[in-house]
Image 1 (cartoon, one colour):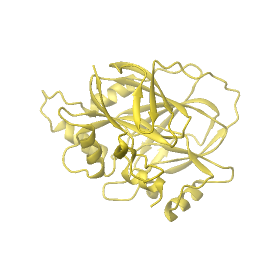
Image 2 (spheres, rainbow, N blue to C red):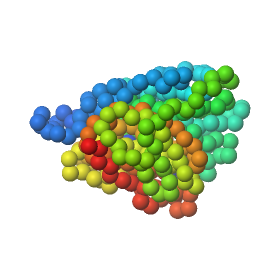
Image 3 (spheres, helix red, strand yellow):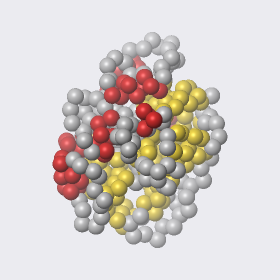
Image 4 (cartoon, helix red, strand yellow):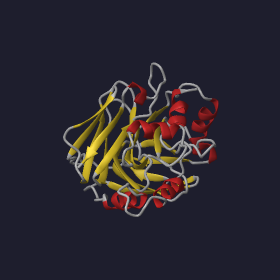
Amino acid sequence: MSPFVRVVVTAFGVSISAASLLEAQSARPAASTAPRASAARTAAAAAFTPIAGANVVQVTANDYAFEMPASIPAGLTTMRFVNKGKELHHLYLVKVEKGKTPDDVMQWFKSGGPPPKWMYPVGGPNASAGETVFTSNLEAGEYVALCVIPSPGGPPHIMKGMIKALTVTPSGNKTAAPSADITLTLSDYDFSFSRTLTPGKHVIAVRNTGTQPHEFIMAKLMPGKTPMQMAQFAENPNGAPPGIPFGGVTDILPGAMVYLSVDIPAGEYAFICFTPDAKDAKPHLAHGMIKQVSVK
């Protein structure tokens, strides 16, 4: 199994439907202090404050397709990613060499093997019960957007047609990077914040200082639940979910920096990296890249 295929099979949301998350919440007593999926949606929507000079692109995920432009200008770009499907989705964005198309990506995906040199990840909005607001500086060129979260007991969504070409055209947009109030550093193998994460709105700069790609999924934990239970549930989704996905960032390369706009309620959160290690192919969480963060 190739590293890329391995990570999509173990990515957060394996066999977890958005509907099951909602059902798990509605089944809890009204007086429960557990995070609710509706609260996640409200918080995510409230998080959106336009970044000056950024091109805002609306991306809607359905079962199983992306509604998004076929072409956008290069430069600072904010993706407002909303899932209207019954299953969880994310947008895994890769840049491809000129002449390569979604058909080439699909052919490689079916055949397996190491990721081709003509394709590399540039980051994108990770799965959420609400809206993920992701910002990055996109260079002109050809890209492919795909969703590699599997259906419950089924294949990754890319195999159901959830893949789309994106052309980024040359642009004179030279907008400077947004002003982040907190930095989340992804290293080999840890998450570290430049300061304490507090409730409320934040623009988080996410940078990879490691030697290999990293991602993260953020989930608000149910009372008494742990990040490891969240990770175990992702791989074997039996029973009620131990947390609610609050977005994150799909794989970015070493040296890359992207941005996530959030509005975080108080609570306990899991931060998990499922990216497979370059040496042993185990998910980075197995190397310690899993952390519980208190937001209060």
